[in-house]
Length: 244
Image 1 (cartoon, one colour):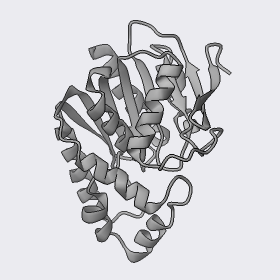
Image 2 (spheres, helix red, strand yellow):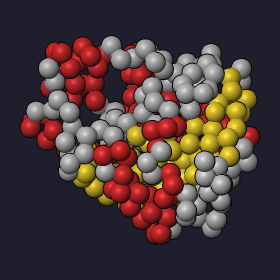
Image 3 (cartoon, helix red, strand yellow):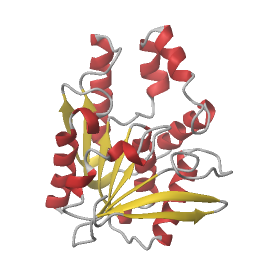
Image 4 (cartoon, one colour):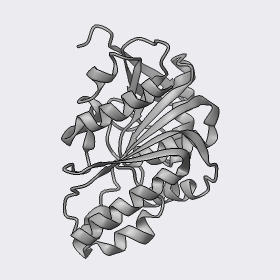
């Protein structure tokens, strides 16, 4: 255990959310990391030690995952963002924040930035799910892939709630004026050459959510860039920390 690691169970409604704080708050913003669908705080273990040398880092388990207890709120991004906002207040972690979201976690942090733009200093989207994934990308995959994809929604909310979260992103019309690093996996499992090219194009489009966006391709990485190419994620976060 790192000397500066602190664990908390924070009451949010009828739930308790498990959090870990690493490092110490400096002049840099706190880095907040949000994992993918059905995933939890351990998804970030590969990059936390390096990032926490520069600033305070918060990871947490969303309700019903990891060491957090369940909650009665719908499992859509808007509700999750509200729970995170309350969590930050109870931990007295003040803005500005750098938000890092992997996969579905990228949906959550985009909605956070839409609703609380004055609190966000920058974002890193780690192979984040685009809002038009179901309509535009999923039909290009095999029936076996689509079936397996649709059947995964048992760990954290259901498929309808996941789609509702993607629809909530479509309602986000604010052009962000913060640095946004879009990290795209260039070697996705089970993707054909055409599917990979489409994924790359959709990730490139995410750059346009900000006036200051940039795409970084992790050419040899699958979906978990933080595991396959942790240096890519670390460099992106440090660039934001160094550029603020």
